[in-house]
Amino acid sequence: MNQSFYIKLYLATFAVFLAIDFVWLSFVATQFYADQIGFLLAPQPNIVAAGLFYALFVVGLLYFVVLPALKVKQSKVGTVALAGAFFGIVTYATYELTNLATIANWPLLLVAVDMLWGTVLSSSVAALSFIIGRRLRK
Image (cartoon, rainbow, N blue to C red; front, side, top):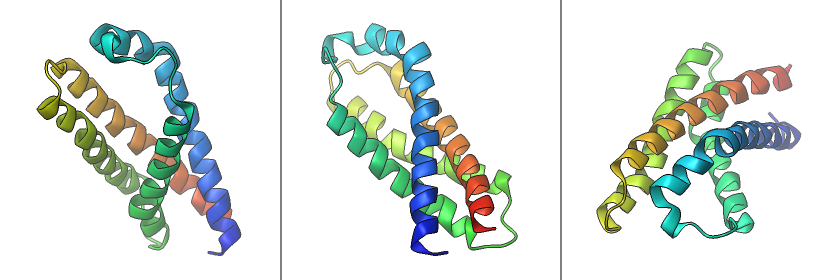
């Protein structure tokens, strides 16, 4: 695996993550978040901060889940999806449970939904990234 491979895989994974999360945020989560924590939401999202989150999250998902699996010839998509789910619940729980512990009246429903979403999103993106990575190697 050379530098070109890593760049292509990163960009593809970033695009997949952004596309799936865009659908979630556009069609499902916007109203839900407004209902749950609308009083805290900025009028416009901070695009730079969001971009940094996406960039770093994809690095973490690749480094801890996808790339190790690509190095093992016997790795299976299901195993990568499970590892991605674990990465997702841990990372999203870090944010949500910290908020629950430190912000008065942080909604428990939001904690559950966001952690579930992080699990599903990370699992899906890891599996797709693994498939893309295998094809890029050929």
